[in-house]
Structure formats: structure tokens, C-alpha cells
Image (cartoon, rainbow, N blue to C red; front, side):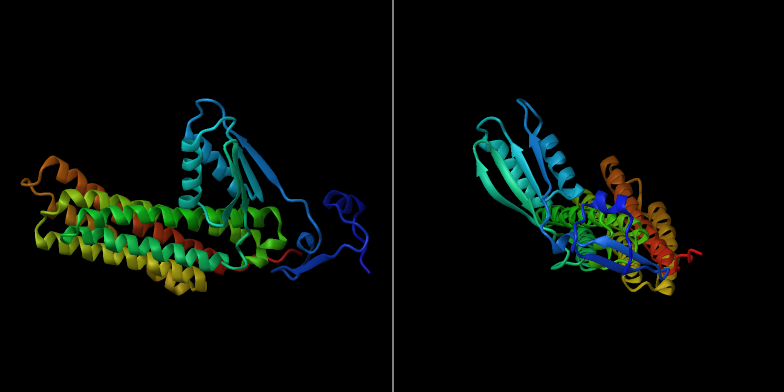
Length: 325
């Protein structure tokens, strides 16, 4: 028998015969948390009201904020019949968020339900899928230089929405886990320290996708580059992607050696970028082409740098937390 502090029992709303979970921590201590999933729990609901003339992007941003905070249901009240605004919110939910279902819709508003999702799609699996999409975007973005159609660059840019969906989904999981420590192990992590590390990783992957979209856009201005220049850009991109892929693998496997190798290769990307810049930016290029080339090379380098940052986080997480004595 274990006696629990009365103030804590009251704060968390425990009643006689309510179950609790006892979780083993990395330092061998035990964490006692209320198992809210084993008893009827009230669902959290947020209401977002749309005022006359309110910017639709503002409304969507705030909807996403409630989603990230972990609300179970989010109600959007329009206050007036506005099918265009309803359509914009509906499309924004579809493009930007995972696990949100519209359960009611009328001229006066929308009611959505947010599914947890971490059982069917664990955090590490979702991160792996997100990274695969971002890496594929990077490869296809540079492929535009070899005569890809304009539709190809637009398709790469559109894929950024898919990465954003995983980004918001993962942030929601991590926010819920920090607030409810019983969820940490359910999503496949060990401690709140892991949540912080993965929060930084998820943001870095999202930024890699942004840079891939930027590369695809700038490639439209560089279709007439010499074949040798295109080849060097592709070689640099391939190395940058290898750094990124290796960093993600080192994190998922907690492989410190692989992480160190990824960091070392990121420095090679920096050297290659400088060499290409001095050779490729010839006087025969227009001002617009020079600007596009610089932005493209910067995005390629930044991808390697984000990979290096992820590898450093992987190394940090390989180190066990100190025991509390």
C-alpha cells in the first residue's frame, strides 16, 4: 500500500478506486500518474470566434494554435453566412493538419474533432515519413535544373504542405506529452528531455522542406546553366541530402558514430558551396540568375547545417541522464 499526498489527489481529481499508472523512469525511480484514459474524462473544447472583417489567415493560424495546444474539439463560429471563409478553413485543415475531422458544419460555423493519432502513427514513424518527404523534395528540386517542366517545380513546392501536416501533428504530440507525462512513453520516448530534443529536430526538418521549396523556385531561373555547373550543384545537393538522411537515421537509432560522420560531412558541403560560387557566378550570368544561384546554394548549405544540428541532438540523447541521489 502506498499513501498519496492528499493535495495531489485533489488537484488531479482522483476518486476512490480510480486507477493510476506507475512508470519506471531512466533513473530507476517511479512516476505515478493518473490514468485518465482508463476513466471517463471530460473532453477539452476551444471556441474560436470570427469577427466581421477578420483576416482569414489570422483565423487559420489561431485554429492551428488550439490544435497544437492539444484541444480535443475546436469550434469555429462565423457569426454570419460566409461559405468562402468556411471553405478556406476547411481547405486549410485538410492541407495543414493530421487527424482533424469536421463533425458538424453549418452556415454559422464548423465543429472539428482532433484525434490523438499517436497509437496508429507513433512519433518516430511520423518523423521518419516527414524526413523522407523533405529529402525527396530536395532531390526533385535540383532535378528541375535538368530540364524539368514548370509543373515539376510547382509539385515540389506543393509537397511542403504535406511536411507541414506532419510538423503540426508532431508538435501536438509533444505538447500533449509534456503536459501529461503518462503519454511520453506511449509515443515512444523516455523523458521530457527527449521531448525537447525532438521538438528541435521536427523544426529543423520543416525548415529543410522550406529550403527545398525555395530551391525549386529558384531553379526556374537557372535552366540555361552549363552542364558542368549543374553537375556540381547536384553533387553538392547529394552530399547535403546524405548529411540530412544520416542525421535522421542516427537520431532514430541513437547512433553516436553515425551522427559524428554526418557532422563531418556537413563541413565538406560548406567547402563545395564556396568553390561552386567562385566558379559558377560568371559575368555572362544576369543579375537575376546570380541572385537565384546564390539563394539556391545557400539553401543547399543550410540543409546540411540543419542535418548537422539534428546529429548533435542525436549525440546529446545518447548520453544517459545523471542519477538523482
